[in-house]
Image 1 (cartoon, one colour):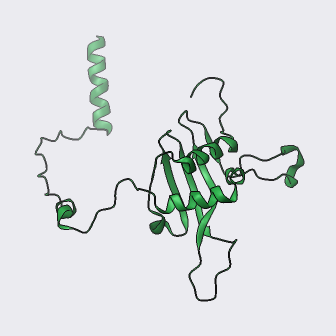
Image 2 (image 1 turned 180 degrees about the horizontal axis):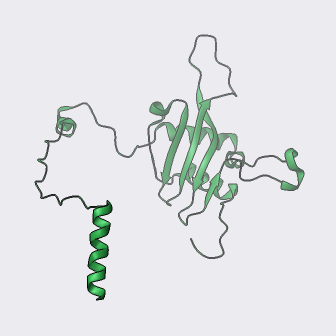
Image 3 (image 1 turned 135 degrees about the horizontal axis):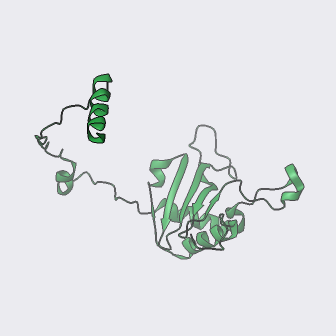
Length: 179
C-alpha cells in the first residue's frame, strides 16, 4: 500500500466505480444473478476494484400473494481498491460525533433510482468467471474425471530419536569433542 493513503476507501469512491459499471466499464461476476438468488454477488471490475453486493428481496415493490418476490441490490457489503484499501458496510458514518444518531453512509445512496435499476439489469446479464460449463458434447471432455496419477516411490528416513537415549548419545558426543 502506498504511503500516506488512508486504510479505508470512502463510499463516494465505491459509488464512483458503480457509476462506471452503469456507464459500461467491463467486469466479471463470481456467480450469475440466478445462481446467487438471495446472498452476496461479487464483481471484479476492469479497474481492478472488487465489490461485493448484497441481493435481497426488493422492498420497493409489493408482490401479489403466491407470486415470486423480485430480488434487488440492497447494499454494498464490502469493496477493495487495487491499492489495498477497503470499504466495509458500517465503516463510514455521516458524523461520528452524533454517536448512535449518526447515519451509515452507503455507496448505493449516491446512485439515482434510474442508475440503480440500470445496475440491476446489467448485473442480471453479467458474465461469470469462470464461464459456466455448457451441457453439450463440445465440453464433455471438460467434465470427464482426470486420470489418477501413481504416487511416487521414495525412501523414507528413519524417525529421529527424541528419548533419553538420544539425548545421552548427543551429550556423549559433545563431551568427546570437548576433550
